[in-house]
Length: 70
Image (cartoon, rainbow, N blue to C red; front, top):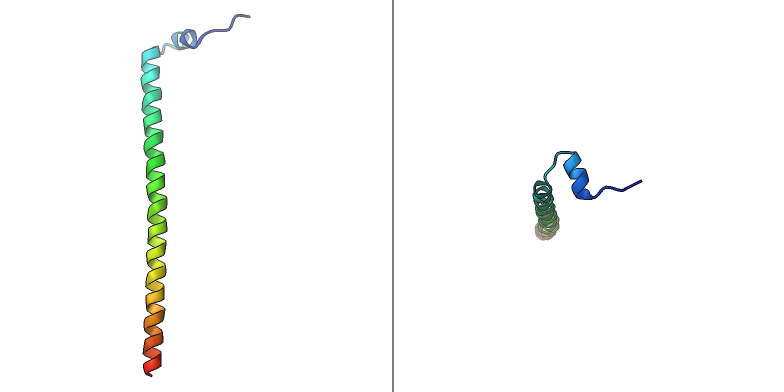
């Protein structure tokens, strides 16, 4: 049994090799953008969590100071 090359399969399927390469390139760029957005989202979550923790500590300290005055 003779194996077909990628070009032969693409030809059978009616897909131009250059078009398929362009699609693969666009897919790789989209994947890279998605990875970047995921990293940015993770960083945002970390920063936001830290901000919430700081606000929580400030509220605890403020409450403690108010209670001391009472």
